[in-house]
Length: 133
Image (cartoon, rainbow, N blue to C red):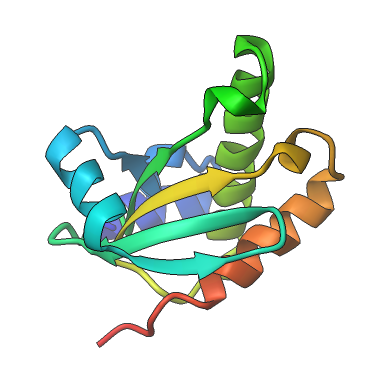
């Protein structure tokens, strides 16, 4: 992150998601993640990851929510919960790793579990990412 962004955020406590992660939009990067990226598992989700060439922000993320998990409103709710859980963890600085492209693939129970359990599960999966070089 840029020093001025960090200082401004630290002074105001107004964090934006874009300070911590952005969406991964290139289809070929997503295909590469699913084809040859590493895996890390939580109880209710799976991460596919690869090192990113981008340093700022620390993560580029795609939330891959299958149609098998429910109707559009259920899938959107799952994505909102995952996005907020990731933002919560990165804002609290509980994740030490950085510089990754991530695909977060939830299971059906993500829609119904307690938010604190979701945060703990995501944190345990993120801790399984390789350490920074």
